[in-house]
Figure 1 (cartoon, rainbow, N blue to C red):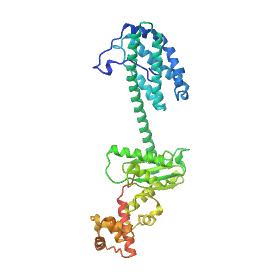
Figure 2 (cartoon, rainbow, N blue to C red):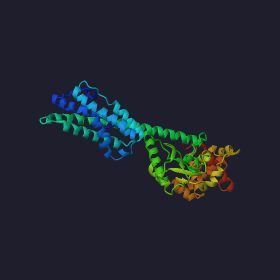
Figure 3 (cartoon, rainbow, N blue to C red):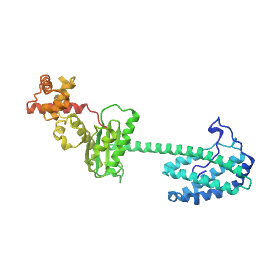
Length: 412
């Protein structure tokens, strides 16, 4: 029996194969003597016994004095009357306790406190049965103890299941609301509420996870780990819009990315995580900051930068070269003749990243330096790009960035 779970006898409805228990006349008589004390015992539970539980005193008065007291009365009466009137025909009712468990979950009452009230309530009822027992009724008391323990197990299971289901539903609803808010803020279609921490300065992050397929369950696990890593890194709850490929996040308040942020995210999602951070002063700047951060990640990846945290200053020239203009399509088309030659494109990308050091390029690609020379010569023949001149190198870099960045999906 509990203030918010109550106690009821096991019922055939719980398991049709279970034998129907027979209640002795002595046990019925003992239970019947406690029925007049139902109101008294309910008050004892809600006002005195539960007051010893950690956190109970902080509950609102109407919850303790009205709702919990009413639930205690219901549980006491249900248990005692089912004993008195034969559990074979009594109601198998956990619906009331499930309803109250869902209500407590919505209000944020800790599950520990909820279950503690059940344990204490059962103890109060047991004490009442002991006090009512007369000499020679020891066997009846033991019989009722067995029913009480079985009832407690059944109701605790129902209450725990309902509570956890309700909390999960509430958490999912809250995540959906926050995702919708972040999506609207980054799209510029939603304004933060007055007084919201997102109305002022914040930090926008673009995150790209290592390539590779992820099953839905694995993707959700990665997203949860990323959320935990971001919250821990910034010491506050970060608003995120993440999936198995990465996404975007908004850190409310003035913030700078911690030095170990990339490492934390790599630990959560695996090596190869890329991210960029762009600060803003007000919510109206969020959409542009999100686009900039996403483009920084794209450019850094396109030009072969190592995974980690990328800043605009790190790819300033490459970022500028990747800006769309009237001639962007024509520049990107310079690499069309080698579009089906990933070996040549990878060699070009690595060669540019290594400051056109043929030996460093060969080492990273596990090739002979002469093979690198041959590939670059073949690329020059097919595209007309002369990497021995500053103009040819700049055109090749711009074409590669425009092509690779244009092929990338938004990281969110």
